[in-house]
Image (cartoon, rainbow, N blue to C red; front, side, top):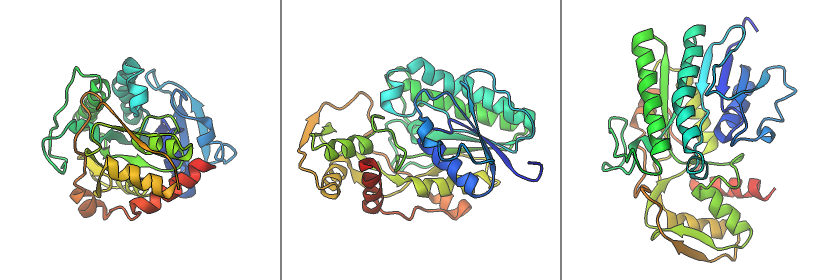
Length: 311
């Protein structure tokens, strides 16, 4: 492996992590996937198990991480990122964002490796600025039910920049906006997977609030391309990655019904606490610095995702 680039991906068997593992193996990197399968699935990486460029280590990254040999990149993707997870496991969510990030940074420092933190648009909270630029500091309720996730990521960003400034580590931070596509968990509690599963089963689509709240939806292949470019870049400041196309939740529900050829009806429930009213990335930095912007339209991406879920 001496002439090969070696990448450690924490949470590599999750939705985004597994898609990234596949991309990096395809690019001839040697990938070490570290995951404890709390919210991920071995099925996501089973196609890579026999590849000599892939290694799987079952481990909780909230505990010390030991990797033998050379490491060139540490990508800290591990997280309880869906509402269904962080609302049920708030302490574990805080641990992987704090202790897990600290351990992953320690590994990068020891190996003199590039470090990439997978952060989130949730650091902006329920934003008072629209669309959200990287310079916006956010509007987060630290003691609300979503605070365990939001603040774990805000802390992760802070310690990442502290390691960059104090230990001169080459660190990068990506703020990921709503992403969807193959390898999503059926029960992850996200709006796209919820709607698709309900539509396929001809069950009522659950819309929270009026459905007028907005989101932007980025297809996984577009996100992975952005991550790959950021990983190899010289950028150290946070970068938004997402699709700036903005849709209401109601528009999404109607589109899923149409594409799934579903007979489901739409039902309304109370809006969860601290649910953001608007969410849309300003991707000016990514366009300028990474020459990146998403290419896959929502209808195309949803059609691909629905086909994958039906399998």
